[in-house]
Image 1 (tube, protein in one colour):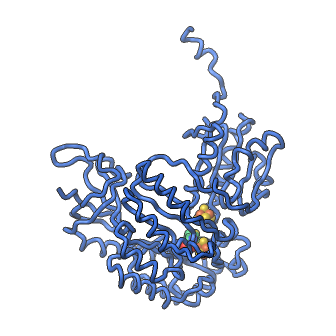
Image 2 (cartoon, rainbow, N blue to C red):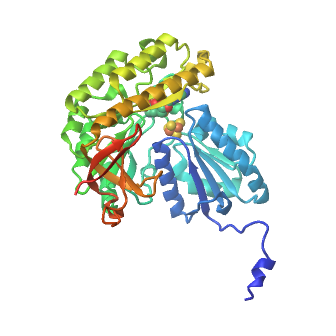
Image 3 (spheres, helix red, strand yellow):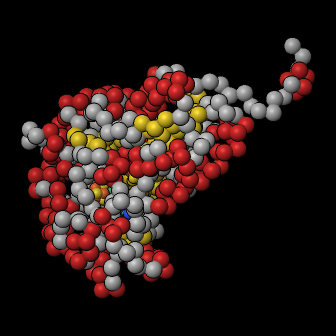
Length: 459
Ligand code: SAH
Ligand code: SF4
Ligand code: F3S
């Protein structure tokens, strides 16, 4: 072989190995978990994951539809793929996830270079759908199907935390929300199956498991046998070798005393609730169809803190819902002042087609939405700063997750709540500490910003 031959025959179009998949995931942890499932099914069919679109024979976008902005990002990605598809017509492009479920075949009409649209109950059939594609050309598979075991089993890249979906869908109908349309009715997974999976994950070396559901605290209702999240927590908590157990996201209405008592009693369960308030005004909560009042929410907070004084509460807030006045907004500010959340995701209301709220005029001007959003984000940072400062000198138990994303010289991890804690990656003697990844260590806090606590490992 002559070395020059390769340069002579340099192809204009790179040669792409068959059965290579590039996948990008948008949206929530449920989508991340679904991506792991789809990669498992594709792996069984001989697909290998690649890191660049250019190297892939199949490009998949696992999409989110919760706000217009999330969909706009995907539209941008699809637009950018037109050229590649023209150069390599054999490239297959698929859209899965919530936007696929919402828009169905309309996506095929809007994007002639897209081959495949796969709904949120159909993605486990991805290999079969790809075969079908070879025979019949472009297709959309978006019916809500049966509940299948294959919908759960995933291959995971190694790490400290494993996401474990324990239910799918949502039986609430918050008037602004697209999730009930994109994910269908609530269905819970059998507790024995969850327990088996967690056992396997612990054997594989995962230190923490995060149980996932849109309203995870309503887990079990559809099983009809009295199963509750509290009972599941007790069952999973008993697994030897598991170091931390988390669950997201909770609906305020489903936080029972049984659940709170169980969280308080089980040492490995994170003292943390992601329990979106959405708003502090009763008038708007009613328009949102949230099914609790401001007083109910505050009562839930009181019940939680009575049992777990240091519990960290994380909220989502929507600003600029239709008809939200300055007075309504002031009620949200007051709620945040009263509760003092450990964290807050603040979103500007985005009108979603076909939701009940789409019948109301989207009448809060975008500048007002932005100003309210910034106001709450600033307030939240003040609250976090005030909550973190007194932690200086305290020793917190940290599950070490890995190198800090913002500073390679540091390791980062989470408290039993959900505080982000960093400490030096080498000790005073210059010895590396990467072997602590996946371990629980005690860290003494030395200083903080409103986002991060800094400290060092206690000998
Ligand atoms: N199932 C979870 C979260 C669902 S979506 C729950 O009920 O808590 C995540 C967050 O997006 C919601 O909590 C809400 O704050 C926000 N969201 C949902 N629909 C929205 C919309 N139309 N506009 C703006 N934010 C929205
Ligand atoms: Fe959407 Fe409400 Fe269901 Fe959460 S509880 S997913 S906000 S409908
Ligand atoms: Fe988005 Fe669907 Fe999750 S709409 S937030 S990806 S459930």
